Amino acid sequence: METNTVILFSALFLIGGVVMAKFSSRLGVPALVLFIIVGMLFGSDGFGFIYFDNASLTQSLGILALVLILFDGGLQTEWKKMKTVLPVSLSLATFGVLITTGLFGVVAKMLLDVNWNEALLLGAIVGSTDAAAVFAVLKGKNIKRKLESTLEAESGSNDPMAMFLTLSLLQLAIGAETFGASMFLTFFWQMGAGLLLGIIFGYAASWAMKSIELGSSGLYPVFSIAIALITFSISDLVNASGLLAVYAAALVLGNTKSLPYGQTIFRFHDGIAWMMQILMFIMLGLLVFPSELFSTWIVLKGLALSLFLILIARPFAVLISTIPFKFTIKEKVFLSWAGLRGAVPIVLATFPLLEGLENSQLFFNLIFFIVLTSALFQGATIPYLAKRLSLTGPEVHIPSHSLELVSSTTVNAEMIPYAITSSSKLLGKELSDISFPDKVLVSAIIRKDQLIAPSGDTKIKVNDVLYILVENQKKSELEKVLGIRKTIGG
Image 1 (cartoon, helix red, strand yellow):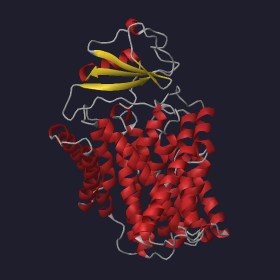
Image 2 (tube, rainbow, N blue to C red):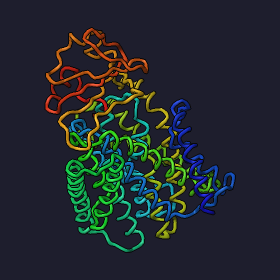
Image 3 (cartoon, rainbow, N blue to C red):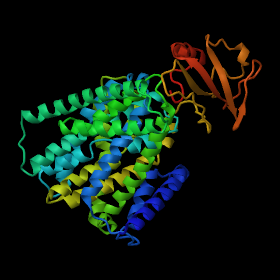
Image 4 (tube, helix red, strand yellow):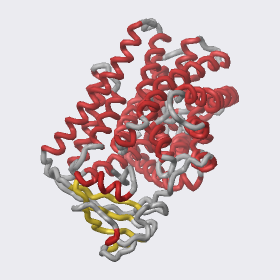
């Protein structure tokens, strides 16, 4: 394809992706499914506009996309929220993946004409939940905070485990490695070194942004994206887990107080993450051939494996992994159902393709079908299930405006947006009646898309968004007054 044609199709894909993302919730279908369908329609088995079978390019773009999506997820995760669910999330991300891999491998061995090594390889590929899918589906759905945090932390931290198992089992399958103690040492090195390097790069980036004036607000997001890429690359060079390092670095950076141009950086990465999701899933759709994917054999075997994964393997893994933790049966049911598969299994399925494994094309088609059914059956019903199980929290009004305290250097204050819900402690009160801490000021109120200059007798109404200027040392006091544990965008 000529350069101009590539640029044209890229633009069309992005525009189509934006439109589909806008209307996916109304259609009741996760956006990633629509992106994949677009890729299949434009591919050689569809309208025939693009012939694409480059697994190597797909793998490279897929890993790049995962790096940027995980970095965005880490930036948006509040440490105070995450640390309360970190033990259970790590249990799901390690023991949960191992249990899923083993159970799925047993059934794959029974249904498919493959050896044990290949069957377990299939299990490892589908063993992890997908950060891109989970972040996208849960966003704005008002799922209870503990459950949402658990799922996000799990999906952000279980990719390294799945990648380690996939690559190790692949090396065993092609005879390049034998099972032994070295594999366990490699695992602990990858996880430990990846976590350490991520924390180091995160603190280094935080210090650099606060200490060095870059001269333009537009350079801060560019610097942050460079941090994401170099964190992954350096970690991968020393055989540490690059994905874990990226998530840890973003978590440190995103929780840095008074980060210069913080909201600008967050919005930039949110847009980049969406762009990478659109391009990645469309490219994955281009790579698959629907005539092979929807053959009777693939559909029957894939559906059986998918149902086993959704209804037995994942629930059993959740049940075992959460034994030491306090979760109700309803919450475990929801954690089981919300374990979405997405881009990660498909990207991992390209590794056997590139190694020329005998059944690699079969594996790729099966994995692709499993991801599609997971996204359709689970992704489309998560909000409904949460409501049926009474696991939704108070409705959160997402403001259509934003105000930001912008400074190119370190400041001791922050502009916090706070949305008023029907359960808010401030509802119905006048500003003069609210005992705000010293040096706290309500700078503006957004009401029905109108900007209101507040005064002492301004009465707080439902769905108001208060923009509150607060010194950093007074932030915890303000949160007590507001009756919240987490400020919007905090």
